[in-house]
Length: 324
Image (tube, rainbow, N blue to C red; front, side, top):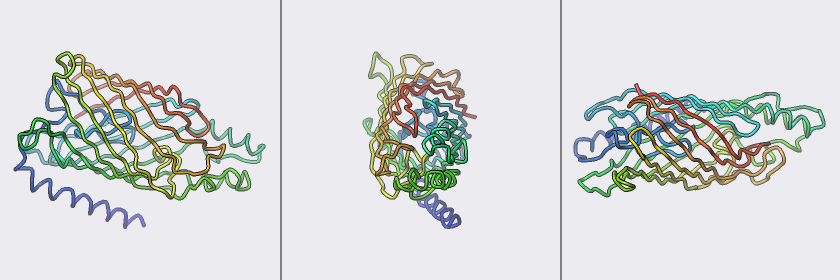
């Protein structure tokens, strides 16, 4: 099974790479978010791709100079307080031919409070059997259209992507909670189906260099097809949903970027049992300080709604990102 998924991922790499290499010498114009000091330098999402905290950007961070086959890597680490739970992330991306982004992110979710909650629900009969869930993201994105291509100033950057997610822990937690509650509170009755899944994404970004008080504003809109519960942190359901996400980034100075982002979410689990609850859309306000053209520090104030046994309103987090 794992071997077949690796082969599928490799096939997608080849499929995306071929048109990019073939068209690279014909494309004119186009910029990335790091091409100019007056353009927002993309951060890294909590899923390990270029973008704001929650929403990917069509721009690719640190793509390298014109003609570069392989850019230098970008690394980031995040922390988010989600009510009584805590989410940690480390991620890395690299860009090939200035058009293909490879990324990996590791999420560690501290669910010790949920473990205690399940123990209480079961009357002390048992718990989740663990205090954490670990989610791996393997990302591949291709910028199929560069911004301002073919000499059109209005042309946005367009990026498509696939993301394979693997949850290390949800299956054992499901077995433990099923045993503790006699099957009444297991993830299985919520339509939990498996520990891995795929997201397919499409994002469009456009920067207007002097739109607000002579300063740049970047708009991003995107679509996501996914069967993930809470981004995959709580496993994957049977049904896929198509959801919308967007961000607006404004740079009042060359050192500061301010962003608002929203990520619509559809609950893949039909039954909102007490252990899981109902999934809500995510919203965030983000401030980023560009320490240099390599180092950025961000803070986020989010509204993430219900996550398991807790309410992540507000959610507070930060990120440190470095481009080599």
